[in-house]
Image 1 (cartoon, rainbow, N blue to C red):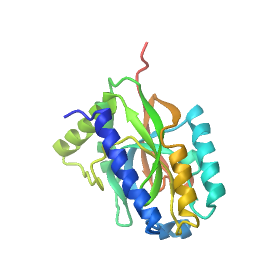
Image 2: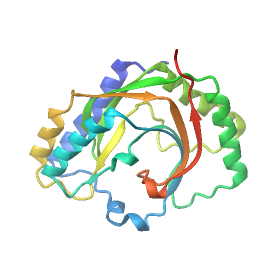
Image 3: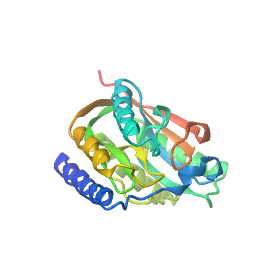
Image 4: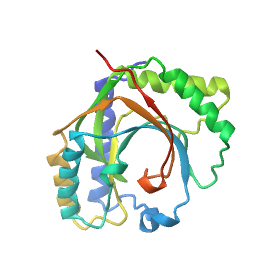
Length: 233
């Protein structure tokens, strides 16, 4: 069944309601790994969309306002922002991969993406979940088709597919909580200010296959393969 914008609206609304309730009750999820990133050894295998262009300036504006209200939270460096296409293996300390496995994943990605055309993701505002601030992404059917194709091929070829959850959104995680909010009401108010404000459009012309950590830190990310998508003429 195709993921519709209406379904995405509902999903983001549910996320928002949960996040606002957590903020008002001082129950946001505090990620303690953020307080010692160099010691975080969790890594995973992921296909993702790197973000570039004018969208970054819009996100930078939002992050600037939020960090002014609460400077103690973790705000993603612009270089680390991305949209997850598929987590083949979510970041974990126990991950062990060998060159042969990597080669099989690369071949699978090549086959699925071979004739795939570029597409767009519209970022239509932000919401907060219990543990993060995210930009709401709305996408063309191409992304869903790619995800389903990768899931099918991975299963058929017996490759590991350990998604933490079956991702259906195209969100961009912009911030996470490393401490309780110092001013929950003002933080939520700022989220609401940008809740339905367009942040621009991501022009997806490539997909990266990476070995990376939970936060996609640039210095911990290894690009295994880049797959350019066909330009629409």
